[in-house]
Length: 147
Image 1: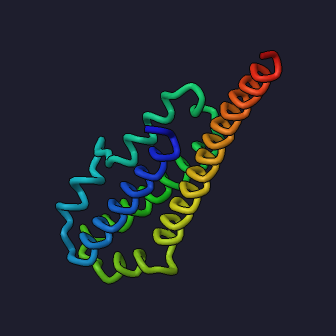
Image 2: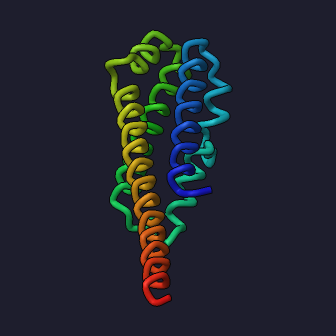
């Protein structure tokens, strides 16, 4: 799988997690949230981020650092929402989840950042392909000129 495809799949995984989280908050299912947010628990997106950190070409990426920061803040806010639910404050938890609140805005920023990263990776991939095609054309033309 090429990197731009990995980013696309990761964005999809984050979006699924965000939706599952919102549904669990709306229904008050604390156990479903704890299963994904408990200590040491990692969703698919978190695991993907860890794999990026282990890649030499990505570990110093400013985009990766920005994505990790936004993701960490999103998870922190999700934990705060979970605490509200545990304390029986479902109305407050639902408010924190609202479209004009930090959790939703950070989730949106993360998806936008991933979309830009995917586009950049796709363009880099296309640039490499065009360079290969250009070299092949020059080689073919040079061979035809000497024949």
